[in-house]
Length: 409
Image 1 (cartoon, rainbow, N blue to C red):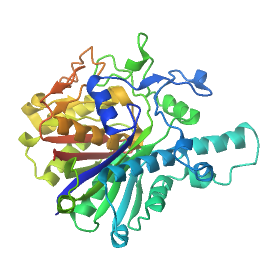
Image 2: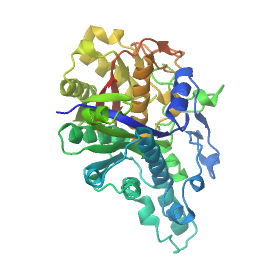
Image 3: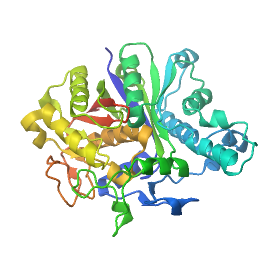
Image 4: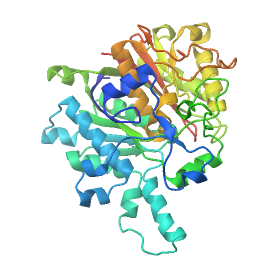
């Protein structure tokens, strides 16, 4: 198995549209969550979201923009930035051995919601001719391949909240095994249509608005947590064999060293301690890491009652007495839950935390929960605490549990 380096990062996020801005916002605890101002927001019980400052007209000519849902626009721009960061010039042969691995949970939901509004709300049959191409889940990956002429595998993963973590892990497997020479991997999500928000609201998983400060409404691992806040954005990574990166003098942001993937089979929407623990163990085995080699963890940490207590128990089950000694960060308190893109964005934050050796804070944790009694780095970043090796957790509805192991460059 070949070592795999991360040589390019491209992000569009509620905390900023470049890695520096993203990391600084997470380090200083600046929230990207706010009251949502969209048509129909008055119909939402908790009109909250974490949004990206983005206008597709700044990046695409009108004919192309009209063919692309916001989720595809995010993905293409993030991929451009990742390739620019990697300074990776591909030969024609290399383009045939370069793959696109993208995760999205909801695809082009904005375009589909708009089409249904035309059909059912306006009782009109004048559906936009590009609605299928805008809405299909594999459109973001397809547009990336078209723009960069990448002829290798083009795969879209839709495993709900673990989609982009799975995409990165599957890309790593193919690079490590020698099947590919380069990959662009990550996720994109633009789920903030009224229909999507109402559907999530109906599941009673969304946070209520904090009465004092709406920006603090997501409170992972806190006793007064009330749910998650949806977010949008994209995070894409350029991955390549370590030796190739060294040979061309690339800046290496970090290394992927392992990947664990398991499935809960108890319930489609209820997390499992055993399933999450199995994914953590699988990642450690894949990476050849002992329990004592893990310096820090980026938790899935959604802020829901069920997930946070289950994830706590899973970490305790795997690490035993050492669980209390591991700094754990839950950054969804700030950037919200990007669903299919969450794992990739949090992987980027994990890379940057290792690079700067800073354990990022779990914000808005003012009321400790006796059932969540680990070291969650509450409210203030901890310099010198991230270490060299980290796990990044992603657990999903549908039961797909993905854990990535990464190491500082």
